[in-house]
Amino acid sequence: MNDQNKTREELIKELNELRLENRAIKESGERRTQGKFVREAEQMDILSILKAAMGSLNDTIILTIDSNYNYLYFNVFHKEVMKYAYGIDVEIGMNILECISNEDDRNKSKINYDRALNGEGFTTLEEYGDLIKAYYETKYAPLYNDHQEIIGTIALSSAVTERVRREEIIKNQAELLDLVHDNIFVRDMKSRITFWNKGAEKKYGWESNEVIGKVTA
Image 1: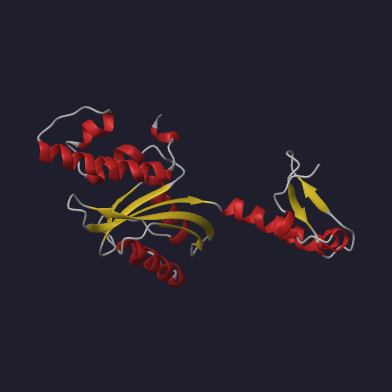
Image 2 (image 1 turned 45 degrees about the vertical axis):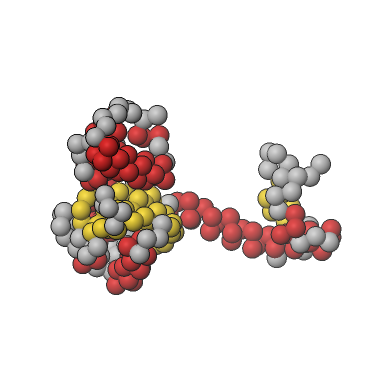
């Protein structure tokens, strides 16, 4: 499997596995060959592994910061997004919080990075941007050193504004259909109920949460 086909979760998992593998190799004195990344892990630090594994992801923001919120690494796409959203050219070593001009965005970012610095891995869906706003789905994870000490965070993010807008449209349309007195329900290609309005609830006696996802004849 090449790097472009890997999910963000798989890449983070692979990086952690590589770090543990590299440590075990050094302690035991063994030199085992288990593919390209393990061979390179014997000679590269964690940031080099990040660059090698994720450099080809052109539609995903990738960045790492230290415990003081200073950039350790970011990809070209993140640099472009920061220029697009906040009008700033970021550089390695700069403080990411100081680069975020919007106060609400800065506060949200600090909360998320602090959670990761405390050892938590999680995903958020939030709106960011000062000059131009957009929705981003972001996965945060702690960044560990060879002694399993947290030294920073990893963040991988994708712009999902179009998806969020579509979901909002569908939600608004569903709310309008709920105002219709006629019974209306929708099924997908596998005959599973995907929408059940108030009229259908009154006619058939089942609430939407009881039938959504059910297969009908």
